[in-house]
Length: 82
Image (cartoon, rainbow, N blue to C red; front, top):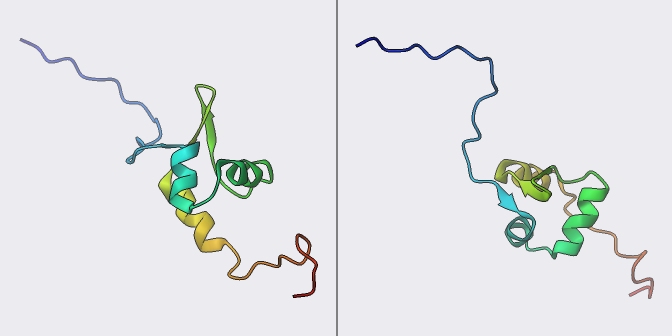
């Protein structure tokens, strides 16, 4: 019995982790899904639409967190001068 050899392909390596949904990614970052969508629209979080739904890699969420500013300036949102 001869074994068939699989043809070689130069495909990208398989994703080694589970992809997260928008809700799951928001939970990881402790954000609302609305806030997540804002970051997506501004291109601040890496994500892909697969099958009509947003999907995220944990590594991309970790990179977003690592690059996020440590202090936020909320003066534009709440300019009471407190």
